[in-house]
Length: 139
Image (cartoon, rainbow, N blue to C red; front, top):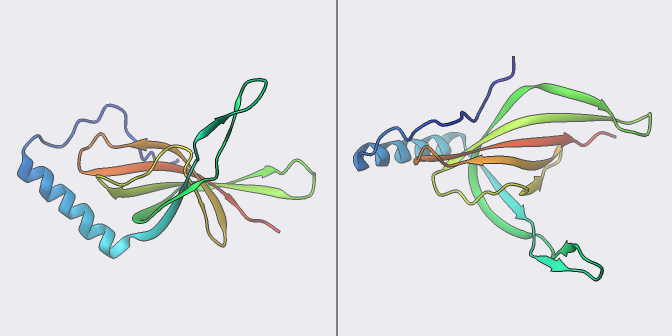
């Protein structure tokens, strides 16, 4: 059974500033031990093109920032469309500081995967969590 990272309509743990600060501090401590530096690439500005629609300017680097990366569920192997090369999809969760600069469609890569941010949740008030889809580099 796949773990769910984001929970709908979860209220902040408290409106007490002292408790909120303690929770923020706890996330900071967790990131100091389990955080991984990630430089996200943000989609550039929309540029109108003749005939309608738009392109985007080059992506902009955001970071590096520290995130705890958690694998969610098992790998999913799909047909790559050419009949020979499989595509391996993986789901991850990111946990970062309450003020982490992460947005839907941010991307990054490492030696094993290409990652794309699918959703972002800042509702707790003391951390930022995001769900990420990764495609393994096969071949």
